[in-house]
Amino acid sequence: MRKLLLALTLPALCCTLPALADTQVFHYVEPGMGGNMQIDTAGGVSSVTINTYQTEGNFSTCEYDSGEDYCYPENGALVCPTESGMDPIIIKLAKNGSSAEVSSFPSAYCGMGAYAIGAWEAGPEPGSEGSSQNSDADVYEINDGGIQGSLTLEFNEDLDAYVTINTVNVNNLATCEFTSTDYGPCNLSFGTNETLNVSCSLEGGETVDLHIPGDGKTVEVTNFPAELCGMNGTALGTYHLKK
Image 1 (tube, helix red, strand yellow):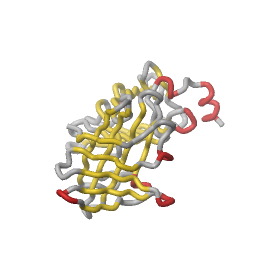
Image 2 (tube, helix red, strand yellow):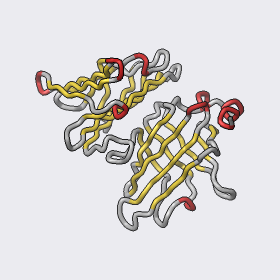
Image 3 (cartoon, one colour):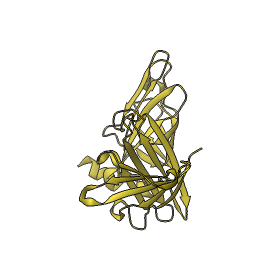
């Protein structure tokens, strides 16, 4: 009930922030640190969980969970409440939802030398819980005809393939979202000239299909079910390897 009331009284997220999936996961990309951040926007309000850790040194961590003290949009950022007397946590999201920046995070939530401020990228941390336990991952981006977004292609040690796709139509904020870990590993087949085809099966027989040239610098999404997108959203097109 409290969540419903907040959804009716807080400013609409869609009007001030990029459109996100009901659950969006980002991984920390600052040197010497790892971790995941999860943003839930179901019901029109946002809750945030952040966990980071040092990858060397004393392995200190940062931990934050907004719980039912919901975050809110302000000046184009997501602001999350903290304990009395502390500055709030501030999260700035890229328009296409492919990255985020934490610009404020109280040190009281961290052990010595750990932090959570800085750059985050879409998708769970490779090898972490909630990912496909991957050992090799490439990120591709699309910015074509008003469609922006990212595609992550990952392989684990058994050469199982996993795909995550998130796009947004910048004109009407319609999104497309797909994570193959919800359905299991994707199928691989090899074509001519060392090309690779990836087919990810959904319930009901639908598939998400990718075609990858031999150089691996681009990925073409050739089939993407409309039910994974909002109205006028699409994930079809050519994605370029992120530099």
